[in-house]
Length: 348
Image (cartoon, rainbow, N blue to C red; front, top):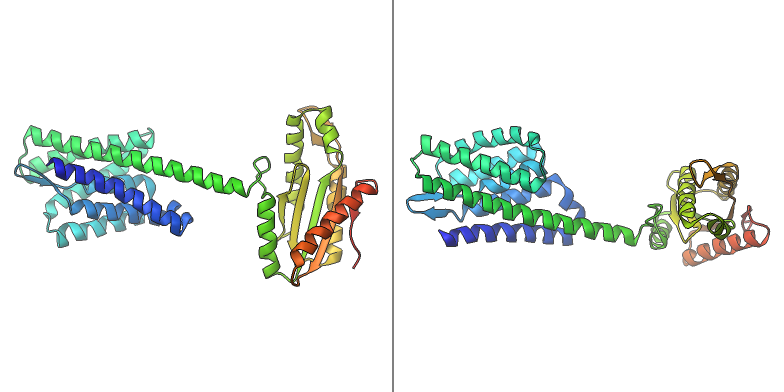
């Protein structure tokens, strides 16, 4: 019995780990899907059916543990499909008594109705659900299928509770690790302050848009005298201004355009397939909008800002990327030299 019990725990832990590991390498978005959760738990249920626990003259399987977990991580129609698949293996392939599965199914529906009312942390919630379910399960078996001793009932409840507890700890730990990895990967390409793409994301976007577009426009938008504002007020106020500027600029991004934070006070906007004239008009509209806006440094105090904008515009040909970036960068420096608060571009 002890070996069977250890095998059940080992299969549960290994199955959860391997599924997440394989899917993380293959398609990380799939991990968050309801289909992935249903596939994982259905597979675990079938594997646990293959390793029943033998205790004296009683044989029982903990296949229902993954299906209980599935209630919290998937949608009803996938849960039903999983339950039907497990029934096929339970009765038709492994020849377990159909009465046991009927008892399970009735109690499973009951647990599905009870779980929404249990407002605990998922680990505690599903452990409590497992205790309730297993207690009702062994009592039903005792009444309708075969008599059980008190010792058998207690062992069955303890075994299922421990497997549920271990499975949920493993499941939650892996999900927490995956969330951290996802956040780390997003932050590699995302500016923490504005939640816009950073310079790495800008570089990738330019490469992709050059493959898909006939022309590409770039606006380098630099806040004028931003270091003086930081010195006069505070870095916290500066951060607040950066966030407000990001919001204002994002509202001006046309369909298909993307906004990035290139550096401290510099933003980049790239727009595919926009004419040169419309690119310049967009830059002027942004400059005017910033000049007219009130930016809050506190609940009561506001400041006015201006921006210098360099326009880069290229018809897509080989080596466009480097020339586009250089042109926009040269133009924003020219705007700074000529007095700031202006748009500069190379006329076509």
